[in-house]
Image (cartoon, rainbow, N blue to C red):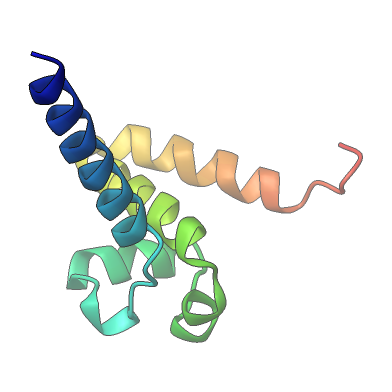
Length: 93
């Protein structure tokens, strides 16, 4: 029983570590779908800017682009307005 538990715990740990390692890999611009690239360009993120982002940030932005792609047109317009407003705030705001 103890041996089986330790084996399961070890397997779970290995899976967790491998998932974290994969999540830290940078995503080349060319690996993004056409739709993802279009969404990123709407958000004013170009290829050179994308390539310079840390892997973690690329992952978060890609997930956001996926959510954005699923939004209705009115939701998209509202999200773009909020994003643009946020871009122009200074650090204190």
